[in-house]
Length: 260
Ligand code: ZN
Image 1 (cartoon, protein in one colour):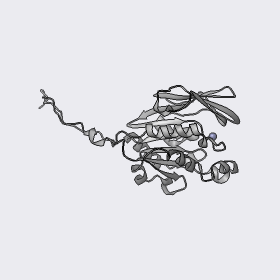
Image 2: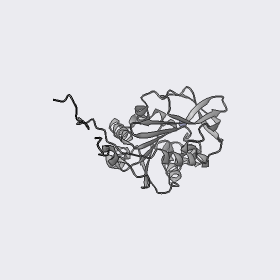
Image 3: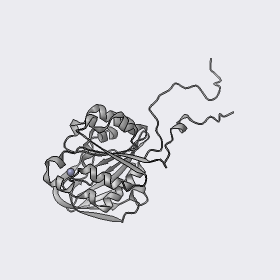
Image 4: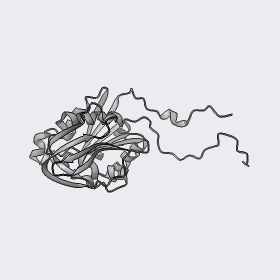
């Protein structure tokens, strides 16, 4: 007779009604050294992101930055994180490999991960993608028009068919990422380029979203549509399970006719 024993993974289900614990990680260097960035984000990009994410009902948002011990991402912090949001640019190489592997492990267990703008070249995103994640770029005050190409996706909820950012850095294809599970946004720039600016993947049990806009000298994270994308995305990548890695030797569920 078939067994009625529930699968072991059932114990790992994460309640969707629990507080959504978000950690916003920011390199936090440009805002200290570049007056243009400091003028737009006087308390750091992480503060603007945290403010946008705090609009999510039941969200508990904390921030962490590169120059904190262990970059603010201790095991205790990651254990208490459902969604990790990442902004980095000039100091990717300063992020300790041990912290990258610690965060990667949590994504594979089920933690959600949102990589923003220049985080396409962060160690954590590249590790999870297994690819170069390179692209074309230009800082020349292009207008960016983001087209919602998957209006049924929860990350696009409440957005118009397209929306514009009047000034942004250009990112252009080819973007050397693995084929996404879903492309939610495609951007067009006044210079003529296009870019897959919102894309999703799953790695292990964790959902991943990459979102392109957010150069440090433009007020992108104050834009209402961008803030809606961030809030939608954090809710979409939230964990459904937490399953630590294991490769157990396991007995059969049925008698094996040829067993010794
Ligand atoms: Zn940039």
